[in-house]
Length: 309
Image: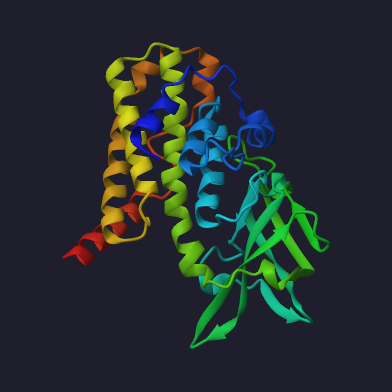
């Protein structure tokens, strides 16, 4: 997609229908980034189209989350709401993943549990990280496609009932859950999916928020310089999305994008006074970019520059 096409989508008439976090599932099924059309093949264009209908940060975040999953798992069915389930009792570190994938006949069996399955309660399809054993002292991981209606899968959202202003979350229990050989992705799950996911999600989630806020600002007469800077950041996010997003130079570009995004968000204070109180509440709490902590981003930036010499 060329920048001119992206701009055409961004500056189409403001979306008349805005969804809120009260029905994230309905929002994604109607406007979600997986709902491609023959004349709209670009993943980033689909993200734009989705985020333009986000009426609060939850829907914008969900749009970015789904787009990030599709970036890493491009064979995801178009209409599916998806979740990526990695963390266990001791977190998402590779050594802490004990869910077990074992061969059985012509397929495999999954046994284990997961914590913090964001979007899992709404998902049609879940990508689950599992161990196939150790080699040279390193836990060998694979991602497994699991249908939400699979026998042996139990979701428990109760531990997160008190969480407000967050995408739906659930813990998972997997008991003798049978999957086909085709459902097991052959790549090293840590290298191909787990390690890049948080950073990819940050880019897509931040871009989705900026797209939605651009539409909001246009509807409520925000200053043109703010709208221009939002537009520039969205175009920059699109440029990032066309890179592999893992090379040192890619990380340098991402660092510039996040820094500029944080700086712009700090300028929006007076703009919020131009929108109704209910709308302001729908976009708070929100400070700068959501996602990877500043310390992690700084570590990535320094590593990138060291690699570039």
